[in-house]
Length: 432
Image (tube, rainbow, N blue to C red; front, top):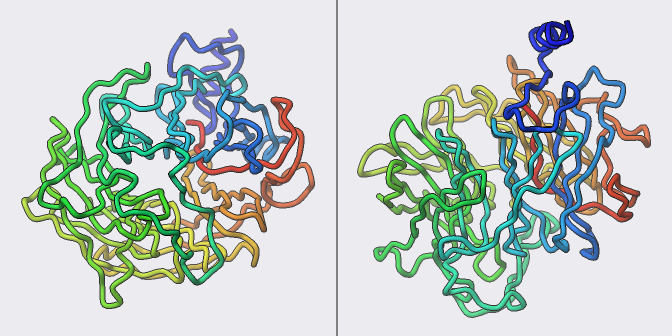
């Protein structure tokens, strides 16, 4: 009888989570959850995974459910995967520590550290993770291990500076970080499956530090961007690379389009597959590049839009809408990609004059977009709602913390794992 009731619940509930692997320690139907990867703002405590109730029908919607502390002293908690993998084994990293974790989140109420790793296959400092059709993870590593200086000599990318100026860069010898890295395929057990360097003799003087990537299995391709996480090189990345997915052979390195103002192509970061199959790349300089011909010998990039300001962060594509975090407007800009060669702005959303947005991620189960902060003035996480008919973006007013205010606060508090302090959030991903 119990099994029949659970089966009926799974059919009628869009938020029911079915365990991906039978070994998961399930005692009940899991809540729909938001996983936020965070650390200690003062960098005295450890990195941790926070679990928040993300079911809009729940009486505890917007409240903490639990948290998982790691043994990593906070340096710079950074990326998670962008969407929850079917296996429930979530990859996250502390980028500046050069360390990644594989977290078992199959039971959101009882997450656990399955494994951690640092350098792999001769490469250091993993940045982004993307799932392959076989369930493995393809990871961008920013550096060749042999070219790495001591950690103490490596200044990292700061939090979002005041707008509109880019920060003044400290002086350091060009290429001190190691100017090439690679891609590594890893399974959920943390084992290396294969790897490849992104060094290209034809671009020997260019910064080739892998940052973001997209996988295009229908055309047997991977596209990656090159952008540095370190201050001395932060304005040097201007290229993308195309690989053959089947054997990770590097096929092409090419420059992005600088546009008429000659700056919007700088520091390409997050590539996303558009509704027409072309790839859109957000840059730190707030440009949007569209790359076509990826399955040919001559892939080409064209600057199709420029957002206000700089320091633009992680975008999300929902249907034919491109949602971009834009610190200069203290919120978000939505583009319509119906004509992919000529995106049109359809809406803007300003959270408040103190908010500096960075990460976004889509939840198809509830129609929400998570938005994490990247400054100290407003350190609240918000959930947004996108009208998929008009592209209008609004703040979910029902997602509230225990203080009664909209959004979730990372201000100083006692967290479920017992630590007290101010949280430093970055990546966030919804459960399936």
